[in-house]
Image (cartoon, rainbow, N blue to C red; front, top):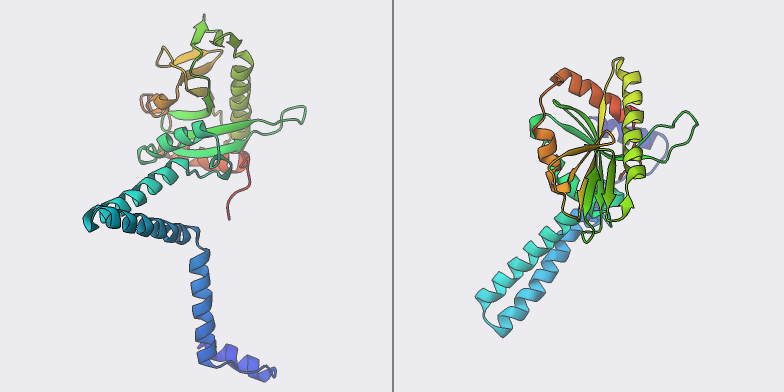
Length: 265
């Protein structure tokens, strides 16, 4: 009915009436164009072409069965490779392997009532200056956490001194820990203003590369641990927030801590 009214309006204004055949052809061309512009479909087309080439080559050199197996392996390898590089944050898809690795771990916590915001900008400080970024803001039953992912040189040892100093080889990481703690404090202030009650945010640093000789160590009020322990670090903590609290804080965080990078359309 709506289509008939729209067509009558065009005729009343003296516009040429479009035949159903032309409209159908146009819709088909637009549909095909949309499909080809879809990155996922285009990626599978590329995989299919590569698999076909690999399969034919192996079939000619060996036999058809080996060719089919080689084609399937080519597809699987490409899927795994792209999955390891994929990220919900565009800026992390080309580099920043540490952030992507933590992101993959945190995805599995969603079924346990955790929500995660990646690459969030820290609000301006009292002086109106801020270039901080929280890699992963985690909100769940055990509290709120600001996790920064770090890739350090694996050849240099990591050690701590009296829970006040952290060294990576000869390098004192005091400034990095202070920055992480400051980011968490700014996030806590922003969340408290939104929800109307105190929201402690625990700062932590997940380190990839060198061996970490402890499970979790609190240094300068920042939890430090090996990157592959990020999921366990959160799961083993006692529950202190209700489901309602978690939902409320998450919605507040979405508004109070905007994305650091432009979001994909």
